[in-house]
Image (spheres, one colour):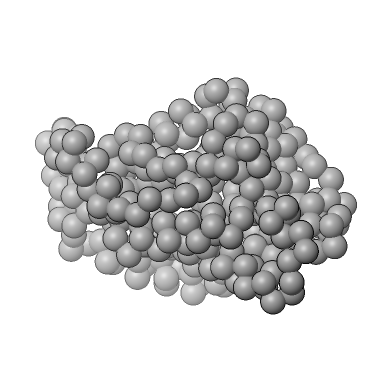
Length: 277
């Protein structure tokens, strides 16, 4: 399949235009999604919640040739400032809760997405922005990025997975300190604690994430999906049940064309050509 054909397939998946997102096929099988409200720090308003939910749902239902996603923010200063507090100023309880239910759905759909999502944190990630990073499979960050869950400082609390995903990433005691103080932490702390996998200069973060995404996209897509699912759900189980779950995920791959191709390519000393079948 040519690059043009892959681009056409990506357009099929992303047939809808998004008001608050920029989407492009950055490499074969790799989709770059950018939060695109730079004038307000890529803050998440109701429309962005709708756009993200629609995008993640479309990719869950039929990713077609897309095998890995990189999620970034437009600009190099702020990845995502969190929820749009200007939009929320004066918002009624009913409207606030309806908006938050929308946000909850998009975060859960992102978390459960079958294909991997790498966060390229090319700027600060606060509140819902950090929760977005934590909902991705892993993350790279810029050297000058800062992170915080600031919700308790404005009268609410993390409500998009922050109180669950952060302790799972960095440990309960450190997460309590981060959440209850609302103090920011820097990229090196994020790396040491496990929020980030690697730190790069700001102008290299997206390109490095795309390189990793390309490496993932070269592997057997069904294998990547099953491995991600096994980690995602197995981590919530006791160990023996998780082992059983892993074997069930493994067994689904035995009769695939890609498994046959992978073994044949190894024996023929050539690069495999995986089709996701």
